[in-house]
Length: 534
Image 1: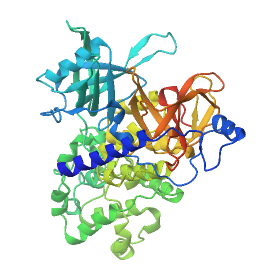
Image 2: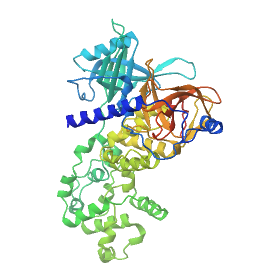
Image 3: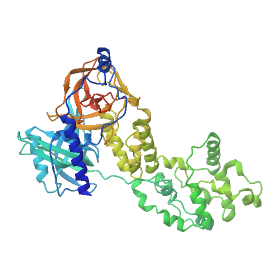
Image 4: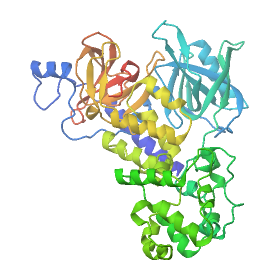
């Protein structure tokens, strides 16, 4: 497997050398020479991605502009949740690192070079640094540091002749910053605590697993019912997501008869929202059952007699007015088995639980991502909601402050719900300074195998997270295209400014090879994008 990966990387590096050896031909956009009007349109209205797509997106993910780098060995995979340790810190402006995301660094300042050297030789957390976002407060202009960051594992590095260091890192785990200081060598350090991440929650099965089987209700055994002195969240199956180990579905279903097991399974498949008539029935049920805030939902069964009488009343409560038997002896005759299967086994409707079902939310988020971004496929992440939530957050083309908000959310289901909300509302990309409309979400272009947004570092050590677009509005190109140190092999770059406020928003990348498609595209800095969802 390793030989196959090395062979593929050698092939990709050979492709990069061939692209870089091509003569710069930015004037030849098409087979015919471009007119002045056409060049003006490309400058003011955006770069077109017409024609076929021939660029190999895996080349950008290699960060070949950093040159040859050496792999590190004996790295520490993961730290235990809650662990407290000291690591060198990197403060980055305009960058939010997430677990599993790649972060390239060109370290030129002496204090941060010392931090890299310390990380390479430390014992407790070898090859590990902490990455924190730093920004200026828009009100008073003071420098502020985020308290939630991500550990980064140094996977590749290279010492240069001028003393600087090129580093390729990968995000590992979220942490809380407890305190920070400068050591004797001048390198920034911090005491961090690894965040104990929750496990993906699957509902309604786990929530339903808290309820006693029908056989317990029939026998009138109340000592096995959930205690009523616990919190309402625990009684109603909405407790902490980390309690999933205590909700064994196998042990729950093992106590059911075959008929009851079928009833239980049928209750788990309903996830449609209740209509107005159902809502009115629920209100009637609540009025008839006299539910009190501090009581367990099963206490309602205790006040309706014993045996079949209790079962009959329970079915009437669950089915509402639509199935109210007129005579006691006609109770089970009037209520067919199919009607009884419609009775939810959980206290709340199943769609309520699915709002917190990590796997259901992952499916929705992946589907929405595919509609908006269109590539790459997210199928491999659907069964890993935790990784999916971090992947979407790290690649979502939104402002830096919004992505920092996603990093600080604890809970997989809560993070996925926020991402779905952003994906459904995200449309416009505007200049942060003057609010000029730059592009829309339909203008996004995936130029890297890692997604539509990625981190890249320039020769001066500044890291930029950019979103790639095939079309942009209101941008002016400054200077001639430069081929050296291009983040996208085969493309030359030019600085792009906002035509309204003259703020540098990013770059225009133009193909250096006639057969390379797209011919040009834009790279917009996420730090210069307005914090806007609609």
